[in-house]
Image (tube, rainbow, N blue to C red; front, side, top):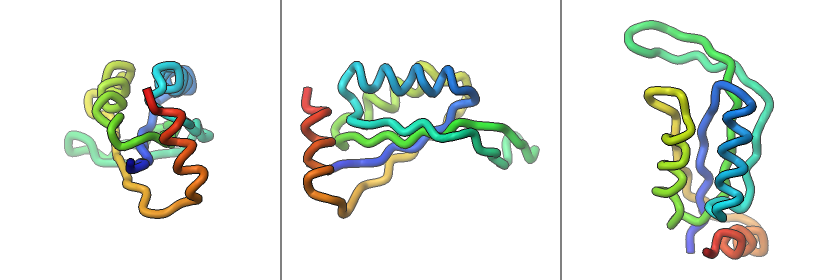
Amino acid sequence: MQVILVLTNFPDHAGAKALAEKLLNDRLAACVNVLPECTSFYRWQGQIETAGEIPLLIKTAARHYDAIEQAIKSLHPYELPEILAVPIGNGLPAYLQWVIDETNV
């Protein structure tokens, strides 16, 4: 089984925490890191925007990606939330196995 890292941002800590708790309770993620606020600069609808955002790092089995995407979209206030999945090519084998075991529902 493949492990992936899903990246997203929320505009506030409460939303980030709600997503983290949902993913863990539903066993869709083994671990979610909610990082301190960062400043994002991006182009949206022809304008350069700046926003404070809370980054999340979600460690999960690749087979859960679709459910995680749906969970993010259902809880996210943005019209177009950032949702990226990065395959994990290498890692500590015991940690990768832990991710698989914790998301084995």
